[in-house]
Image 1 (cartoon, rainbow, N blue to C red):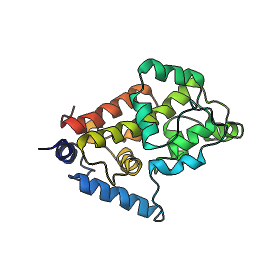
Image 2 (cartoon, helix red, strand yellow):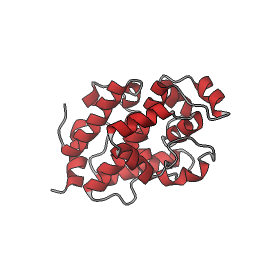
Image 3 (spheres, rainbow, N blue to C red):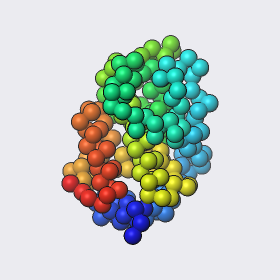
Length: 205
């Protein structure tokens, strides 16, 4: 049995809201995009929207590789990034990768929408705690993309669409909570990340 099959089968056993095969997952991702008006937007597509005065680590771009690098970065490096500050415009760009209304995503992260909009005018930094939660969303995107690559069939898979669907639905492995509702604390984010990894290994808490 391939690792891709393991993810697919474990998903069907542990998460009632997910389909049982990677083909179904990709199909659901495309259906989610169709619901957005038929515009296909993948992780790579928003590079041009990064503000010229973006302060997000210099190298970072919201592409598949950018999010994978964010996910794989050493912990101490990630700590330095948080301390350096995440600009409000950068936060909007990262959260914009989700097929979730930006206001809903910010509310889930316990970040006031009005504060982000005000700071976005000059790309002023969010607080370290707020910035860390935003980067957590980026790490999840990178984690999922890494899992798909390791499972051997990344072609045609829309990580942002799939993650948006999964995070917006109740997950049995999380006690019936939506992953999105656990993103307001780093402990909750770690739990969501753990459940994603369990999907790959076929184990559930």
